[in-house]
Image 1 (cartoon, rainbow, N blue to C red):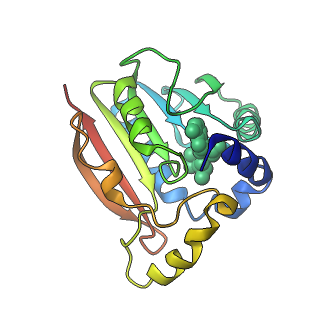
Image 2: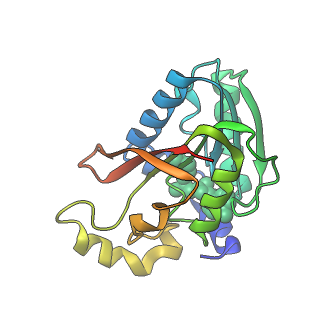
Length: 205
Ligand SMILES: C[S@@+](CC[C@H](N)C(=O)[O-])C[C@H]1O[C@@H](n2cnc3c(N)ncnc32)[C@H](O)[C@@H]1O
């Protein structure tokens, strides 16, 4: 999916995104925020969307978000204002494939439900590794193809709808595994029905 298609798709989803997808995808965000809160420091959320994880971070965590969709970012701004957050360092409209922020500037870099949306996930992962300090964590929550028995037919049916839905239902986990700058420390299926997977990597030198 090209960036202009993504922007068009998420302009349409933005007003109803929380209602349509908030609940089903919440497990991964909770696990990511729990890890960030337990270890402390700063987090960059790549493709932060409407900021559904914002309320889960401890006030001690400095949070920065980037997203390519102005409408989704407006949702995140509204949520931050409603929650009265004082730990939001910035929300920026940027492409996750070329993030204009300095190397190693975050303790944690998270991508929740975005890897199967972006046009070049390998480039996004390179950016996440670049922005994470050595020893920090890279966190990914996503739906991956073939992880849950019985869903393959639904996934095959959804595949041609990628532009409309805004993500690729048949996204393979291998595309985010094996990066030389990352060591996998945790992989687990997330509720509901184990449909989503949470991956936690350590950034190695
Ligand atoms: C399924 S939503 C997930 C939003 C949020 N992370 C969450 O968990 O609710 C995917 C998000 O990725 C954003 N996105 C897609 N491609 C992007 C890109 N190339 N750069 C930055 N953000 C992108 C979309 O605008 C959208 O907000």
